[in-house]
Image 1 (cartoon, rainbow, N blue to C red):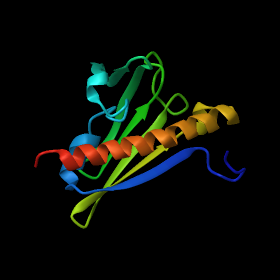
Image 2: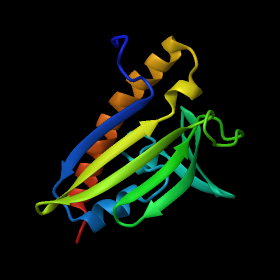
Image 3: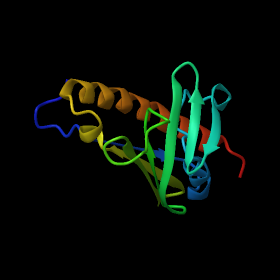
Image 4: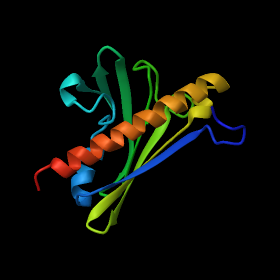
Length: 152
């Protein structure tokens, strides 16, 4: 449970990856790479206009809207839970990836924000943030594994 003063609108996590920034960029610049269990064979990705929709049975279809990109240092997306709903502030969270060269590797930082407007109920928001904190920790481990195993 979170304390009353804790910010429940954003999640920030980072991981140091022993791979060059270009290799990490190749992973995080794919819209929706973070949806799933780390095994790409368990999901399918389709383009629907500006949206990328990740089908991840049995959990559903997850729309991802690319927002901004500054290769190889920054990329952002809006993500939601309803492919039929426009992804804007209030109907989605903003997912940002920041890449920084550090030593011979890359520091990958993710920031997901917008939980307050997406989940007006404090209980629903706390659950969503808690679920996503665990999800990001798993997905950053997947990014580290995949980037470090990619062929140069």
